[in-house]
Every structure is written in structure tokens, then in C-alpha cells.
Length: 149
Image (cartoon, rainbow, N blue to C red):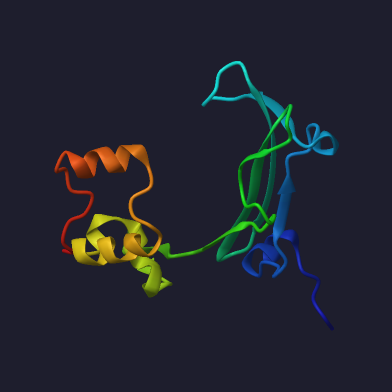
């Protein structure tokens, strides 16, 4: 006879469908109304939708100016950011170790996982360093990369 599966057995065999979440407050109005951090005194409507699989996280977040309805951030076509698991933590004799599951993305884990040349090449494909903090560090001669161990 077939054994019944308990709720705890299901944790060892997770479903292949994602867990989905949406920001429900004022969803029908276009999202939550928040004061802009970039322009105090103005307001934006924020909508977030998340989908989580074992090895992927998709985020479709976007913000629109509350008055003009113009998009402030997010994907103009409504396509979510699609992030793939790069590594997992595994126990090795009680010590947690990083197990790389996507070697082609390991450079995104930080300075220990890339050379300065690899970082510069990857960043140049997308137009270079994009955040003000990183741009300032780069101009001041502070390296944002180091050699692999």
C-alpha cells in the first residue's frame, strides 16, 4: 500500500512550482504610496511581485510617479529581474563551506572569486561601474577588486 506523506516529508521534496508573493496593499491602485527618498515631498507608487524557486528568485519591482504615472524604476516591459543561485552553503564537518553551483556567475560573489581584469571585463559589458559609491571609490584609487586566493 502507498504510504501517506506527512507535511515534514514534503519539506525534503519541495514542489517545482514557485512560491509567489505580491505587495497587496493598494495593489489595485498601482501600489503602495510612499514618499520618494530621492525627491522628498514627491510620492511614488511601488509594486513588488516575487517568485521563489529552489535555485531562482525573480523580482518584478517598479515605481511610478504618483502624479504623472511615469515609471521611476523597474523594467519598462514588466520583465522581472531573474536571479539564479550562484552558490549553496554545505556543512563540512560542522563548518559551513560555499559550494559553487553556477561557476559562470562565481565572479559576482566578490573579490575572492575574481581577478581585477575579470571584473573590469564583466562590468564594461554593461557600461561600467554604475553606483555613485563605486564610481567614487574607483576615482579615489580604492580598488573594488582583488586577486583570487
